[in-house]
Image (cartoon, rainbow, N blue to C red; front, side, top):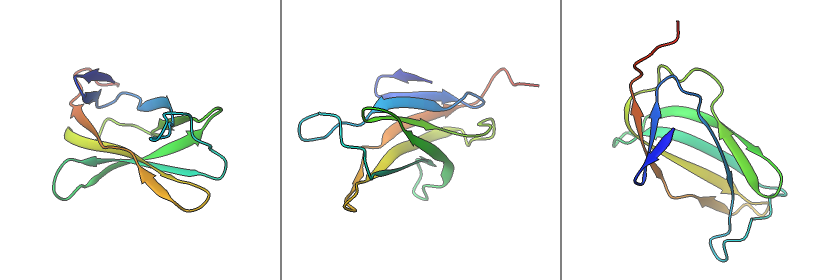
Length: 112
C-alpha cells in the first residue's frame, strides 16, 4: 500500500492493514474511545458503490485504531475504489471520515 499524491494504491494479494489515531475535527486531539463502535468498508467508485470488503476494526490504546481485512485480497475488484471509516460514539452520534480514493491494481506476481 502506498500513497501517490492523495490516492492510495493497493495491489490485489497484498495484506490490507492500517493503523492510525482518531482525532477530533474541532481541536485535532485524540478522541475518547470508551463506548464507541467503528465500521469500515471499501467500495467500488461507481454509481452502484458495490462492496469490495468489510474491514475489521480494532480499537487500540490512546485513540489508535487498527483496520484490516481478514482473508485473501487476490480477488478484490481492481480499479477505482473508495474507503471510509464510520465512528458511532456512546451517545449514538455518527461521524464518517472523508472518503479515501483508492486504486486497486492487478497483481503481477501471484502466490502459488
